Every structure is written in C-alpha cells, then in structure tokens.
Amino acid sequence: MLTSLSFSKYHGAGNDFLLFDDWEEMFPESNGALIASLCDRKTGVGADGLILARKGVQSEFSMLYFNSDGSPAPLCGNGLRCLGAHLKSLGRVDRSCQVETGAGLLTVKWKKEKIFTQFPLIKQEGSFIDTGAPHLVIFSSDLEKENVLSEGRRVRSLPCFAPSGVNVTFIQLLAPGEIGARFYERGVEDETLACGTGAMAGAIAAARQQGWKGAIGVTTRSKARFEAFVGEEFWLSGPAVKVFEGVVNVAGVFQKTAG
Image (tube, rainbow, N blue to C red):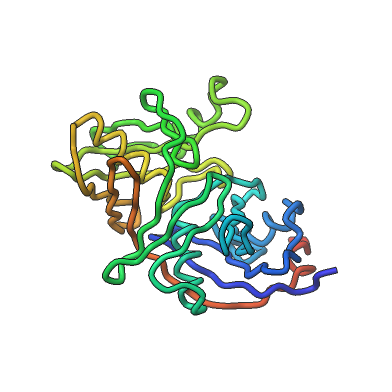
C-alpha cells in the first residue's frame, strides 16, 4: 500500500496541476476519493487537476488526467503543455513529442522556446465545440460583468448535456484577432483562471463567426495570453511553469479535522 507519493506542482496560466511520474503504473487511478483529497486546497496539496505521466503504447508517453473532484477527463490542454514542459525538464524530449491522451495521439512541440500543443476538433454543432473536452461557447458583450459561477453552473447541468455535463466558455471580442475568455469547468465545479481546451474552443468559435485566419490571441482571467492557431490543424501556445516538487503523506490527506 502506498504511504507517500512524490509529485511536481505545475501551472499553465494559473490553471494548476499535481503531476506524478507514474512510469510503473503504481498510482491507484481508480481511487477518485484519493485524487479529490490530493486536489483539495484546504486539506490536500491543492490543484485544479491531477496528471499521471505514463508509458504509451502508440508513443513513448501517455497522459491520464483527472479533475479535482476525482473524475477522469479525456484531455486537459494546459495539463498537456505542462506535461510536455516536465518531460523536457527531465531530458526525455528535445523539440517535439507525441502523447497518448483520452482524446487521441497529440503532439507537443517547441518553437523559439514557445510550447505548442495540438488539439483535436472532435465535434462542432453551433456553439457546442469539443476540443478534447466539450465546451459551450457563449459570446459576451462584457466579460467583467458575467456571473461565470452561477451561469456556468446552470448551463453545465442543463438536461441536454446530461449525464456528463459541459464546460462553459465565455468569450468577448476585443479587437480583430483578439478575444477575452473566462471558463467554468465541470469536475472543478468552479471558475478557473485558464482552460486550454476552452481557449481553443473560444478561438474556433470567434474565428468562424468573424472569418479570422491565422493566430488569435486569447486573454484569460489570469491575464495570461494564449496564441491559438485555427486552420486545418488546431494549436495553442502558452505558459507552463513548474512551481515546486514535494512528497505527500497519503494517509494525511484523508484525515478529517474537527472544530
């Protein structure tokens, strides 16, 4: 039985993750309660999600991703970029790598020190866009006035999106080729500072409504700016920062505090 776990803490534009090198597949991935406890910001380490770095079958690497409530998700765009940065820091990749995800085999690459991650476009029906995770994109005239928490929670649970629900991305057109974006993420059940799949979905929606081509800037709640590329393929560049490394006491995250 595992008593302690080593991890790295990363964030991509304020969207933060616990990343575990799980090359021998020892992490109990089916234990959603453990994952939720590790991600708890008061009694655990705290994060929006958890990443397991593993060996792949079709490629050298694979990524398993879990939301902070312990539920699995096929893809996290910011998480994939952070995993790429982590693999590069370990000396396991040079200028590019492919990673198996629940949304398919995707590429991470570096150009002039910028990290680019590839996204699938699984489905688009009107404002519903699945870029590895499903998003409903809502155009806003004033992002600052949006009640993202209450409206996101309402839309996320609409019967038409049952049983899994949907992520909700609010975007505002700022200038030609520039949008602002805010995100309500299912599985976190809160507004997050950034969301990679949401930024990509928002850029696709704006590009197709406005006829934009080439790079599209996406500024998030954290004031970080992504560059999205919408064309025959879909790419996003943005930050990936290692914050610290640590070891967590597995038993400790399950302890309940009184008072």
